[in-house]
Image (cartoon, rainbow, N blue to C red; front, top):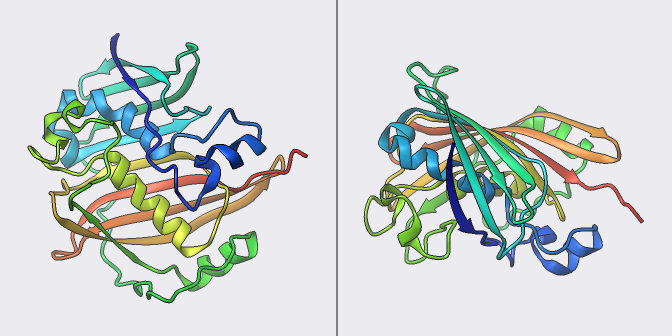
Length: 269
């Protein structure tokens, strides 16, 4: 079993989702602001991308699960196990030795599902005010459809999951390979979810993602979303959505994502 070690970085301390801020997170019983689930997922996939390179960006599949918090500044280890050819399982241990996340990954010779087609969902307007998330709102969005959003990979300060870009796999370093990393790509699914219904605080739990094409530096993506399921369990309220990311120019799909999250945490007071 191989081992990769790094220091956790809270990539969203000023997010509208204040679960990433110390003050609100502590009110819900956490030690501090949570490192975003998309960032933790990027850590899980770091050794996978080191191993598979461009093959991963073109035909990689990952099922990433977050089971416990990871905090800013924590030293962590990602253990990777070659399950069989084209498959790697990874486990993230925090500095206390507890496994807080894991991923099952594989290269797909054939896609698990038909490549999503661009639907042309209406793009969100600048003055759009998202409704406050509720089971009723998700039901309405499932029936009527969701707003589409555009996200740009590039610029002077692209979103990366480590404090130094030179620590990224070369293919993901903005000044070298320049391809989009999982923190940004899965981040698009978070942003469109929160853009369609306002949630604060909320917690990213799991993503299942499939790559179809790499996303080059200075590429604009169009994200389209559909509501798959929503329910209450043990006092938490959950939302599951499917998100597809398309190249804005070609309208070809780059990645499909299934996202599960708690959109309303139970009140423990």
